[in-house]
Image (cartoon, rainbow, N blue to C red; front, top):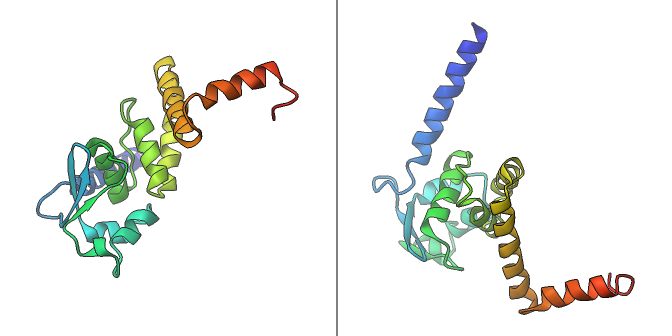
Length: 170
């Protein structure tokens, strides 16, 4: 009997969290547009200011910043609106809705937007759902990030040198 009550309580909590997350893009609740590469995500400044998950977004809407009064904020790096929407839904309710099509991009945004709890959820999802396809995509993104930071082709050179001269390259 106690487990039925606990299960019902958990179901009600989950339903309430989903309703809260559904306020993302709700025109009655939103007063700020986050401009993305392929559209925008409408959010509430008040919710972003009060959420405990992202220092980036709390600061973004803090008094004294230009974005605190603007109606639109263009997000750097041109993220996809669907990925930003996933981040915002997490910021509203603390529950990550992840799948293989978004998890790596959401992880990148979680790191960029200073959301360690979301990043942790993404890493846990990856660990629980690793597949050959996801591993290949992870390596592709990792190589792109490495090349962006260190120059094109440097990863292959470094790996070749490490293979040829293992004691010389640390």
